[in-house]
Image 1 (cartoon, rainbow, N blue to C red):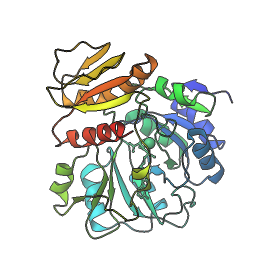
Image 2 (tube, protein in one colour; image 1 turned 90 degrees about the vertical axis):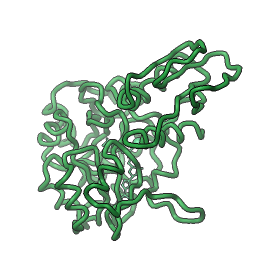
Image 3 (cartoon, rainbow, N blue to C red; image 1 turned 135 degrees about the horizontal axis):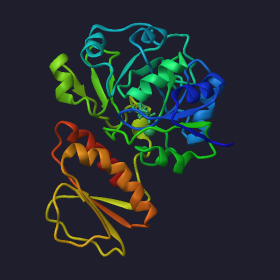
Length: 313
Ligand code: TXA
Ligand code: MG
């Protein structure tokens, strides 16, 4: 398959209308989109990404009215979140409408819904005229793509089109909040923070996987966000293992020498840069990547979540 590269949202939308799959930028990471009502196109997403078919997809809307096409109801808490934040890097899990094919949600009776804020994403969604399911546009297990060239690296020849936008602003995937029970539960942390959500619904809690329990968000159990290099999470004074090539990313310069190093000027910058840094290190054949730990508040919670997952592999 030839992958078509374009900066035009209307050209990219033509591929969706013809049943194809298209990578596009959002404010979080690049997504790989297909028409939410087109089962065959959705099958292509799972094949192109080599995604396990028990991992549900998020539906993206270009306008609030489209949410009603996807869900069978919206709880008062969910409505409060929508009013406070949408469009935003926030995904709400709601009861699914029977019209959405089960392949989209991996047979769950719920669906994650998000309205992206990124201008090009919104133009593209408007041109498509339908909600799109879109997981991150990487091969399953790799770091999420924050540039169109990272999408190209993983998926060239496997998808119909890449809509070429800028580097994504946030760089970490959206916050996912389960709104199907009485208390909203954060399944995945992101740029809409625990603190932000608590201001709207104070009962909001962070989901913790308990032993022997069915995982509430299937994606949580899969290998994630990991470069090929070994990731080591460190505090300010750390000992360097004896590896041939090593890299460092963090907020504070250390005394050690690294082959590749990125000192970020803020936690936002760190979050925005980390997945691309992982990819850079893999291309350079780095063996070990040291990542400075940050305080787990605000976006720091989401950043630490991704760093911990990457270091578990
Ligand atoms: O920022 C984002 O969310 C990006 C951009 C493209 O929008 N998308 C993204 O999709 O990160 P993906 O598929 O890589 O991650 C979706 C996560 C997975 O962990 C999945 O298990 C969870 O959301 N999820 C999706 N639908 C769900 C549902 N109905 N119930 C529980 N978890 C769900
Ligand atoms: Mg993903």
